[in-house]
Image (cartoon, rainbow, N blue to C red; front, side, top):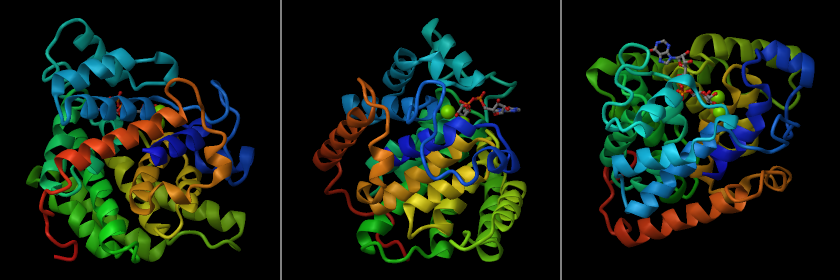
Length: 336
Ligand code: R7I
Ligand code: MG
Ligand code: MG
């Protein structure tokens, strides 16, 4: 949850810029930059993630009507929400049932990344039962993003967070095997979601042929690699052009959460969201202890800022402990 916030805050100031423009204006972004609402502030990505966590805690599990009402009550337009999400939340506020509020957005429901960027708490809460994580991820997507490709993006991200958390714990942070990881992430996909299957294949390919930059790499080499990754995997606000990119950023930098976010932001496009999703994966794997203090110190405070998010994570953990700590692991072994 902190990883979502950090990636969001690091990427937000350059959201929408391409990799060359980012390099020209800022060089390699390693530190939180000044922004419209101030350095270290969060956007819709963190706000919706927190709202979902609040609802999971309050209802001790997923309750669609409650989660939808929480999204509505937390809506703050200054935080840069996607248009489809705003429309769905306005319909819910006007009394439409949450199951159908987003049904006609963009014709047949949104496939934006809005329901994937917020889903980390679902992956955390249901990490012992990945089928359930996938199911809840799809249900919470329906509130705003009911296009099959939007739902699948949320399912893939929740699975990624669940597997990353389990890998960190069960394998004692042993090195992540990208083949096994991506195989598990693809496991919950349905037949009509083949596009994600292809994307996961492209992630494998890019990990092999375009690995993370080395510390000594020239700025030109980094830029060429960033342009290649964003061209092949995508870097825009469509779920299928950003969820696979976040998986790549995590897997290419699985031993170094700080670098995973720096790498994600360098790819340009939907930088806050790709970095937020990368942060969710890196944070689930490593825990909160490896994030740089210079970033944590500069995160927005206030009523829904850093300390609040950390407290919310603690609350979610306590609910998990009470309800799910005894749940048998499904699948029982990650390597299976
Ligand atoms: O998904 P959503 O909440 O947006 C999240 C993004 C993140 O980058 C946040 O940081 C914030 O900046 O917004 O909002 P949507 O409007 O549902 O979807 C986002 C984008 O996906 C839209 O602007 C469209 O470009 C694209 N999109 C679609 N395009 C064509 N047809 C989503 N669904 C469709 C579609 O059905
Ligand atoms: Mg945002
Ligand atoms: Mg974004």
